Amino acid sequence: MPSTKTFFYAKNLNDVFYQLKNISELNIVGGCTSFVGKNLPDKALSIRDIADLKVIDKRERYIDLGAALSLSEIEDLGEANLPKIFYEAITTIANRNVRNIATVGGNICTKDFYNTLYAPLLALDARVEFMEEDDSHLQAIMRFDSIPHGMILSKVRLPLEEWEISVFRRLGPPNSINELSAGFAFLANSQKNQISDLRIAYAGSFKFRDIDLENKLIGAHLPLSNTAISNFMLEAEDFFNRAIKDKGVNDILKRQFWNLVKYSLEQLT
Ligand SMILES: Cc1cc2nc3c(=O)[nH]c(=O)nc-3n(C[C@H](O)[C@H](O)[C@H](O)COP(=O)(O)OP(=O)(O)OC[C@H]3O[C@@H](n4cnc5c(N)ncnc54)[C@H](O)[C@@H]3O)c2cc1C
Image (cartoon, rainbow, N blue to C red; front, side, top):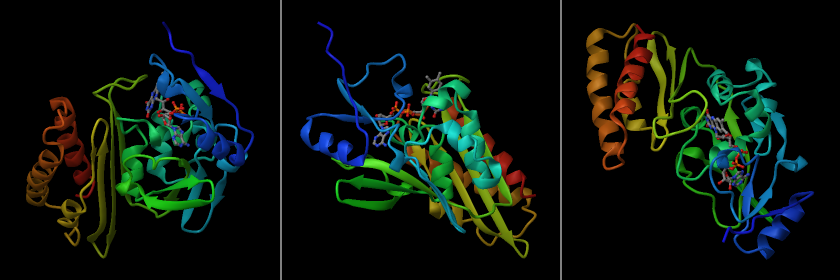
């Protein structure tokens, strides 16, 4: 017998937390686009229209984006108001119709898969805010695995540093997500002809970012020599293989990682 699906309605955050407390196994959802072709949860409450979760707050060093903002609302802020790599990643997701419905919170919270925005968020050292009835806390996305019980994702905080080199690639089929989908992000800055900051992130059915690996190139002189690139590629291969061991990552995604790391490093020559 098909199971009954119930969609609950909330006008504000008080309603959301009241229902979370009183309805067992209630799932917080955004635009539900991640469920296309799959089963919707039996009990769902969409936070898409909660005004408090649609905040856009731009400061000197960061911008806060409410979890209920649609991807197209964020896209409409324009590249000048967002980290370039994040803006680029948003524009590669699905198409404008899906982006009108899909929320940034849903992109981050999808279970068992790190969606297109994940690698740029990892590379940017973004932070995510979790909220419960009378408390909230910000946490580095690097340390985020799943939403704490009884909480919702309320916003994401993006640092607004400038990056000299910014490379983003969305991998996989163009209009859907499958096991060959992944996002790659590379950021680099230099000072006095030496690499001063470097970030490499890769995410899909797995997530990868390793600060020890990145540190191996901090201080390297620019332009990078071919030998420096080859040596770093060996290190990157070793770090990545260890991180994804036993995770069944497809060989195509492994090869794409090497190619993209090499391509990105060549931007520093
Ligand atoms: C045709 C098509 C193409 C697509 N292409 C892409 C693509 O290229 N890249 C990509 O990344 N995705 C893609 N998607 C998947 C999806 O559209 C996006 O990931 C989207 O951002 C999900 O947002 P949503 O609001 O619809 O999330 P939902 O489907 O509503 O939710 C996703 C998950 O997050 C949880 N959740 C949502 N919001 C919150 C919150 N605030 N707090 C706690 N938990 C929450 C839900 O319980 C659920 O588990 C595609 C989908 C379709 C239909």
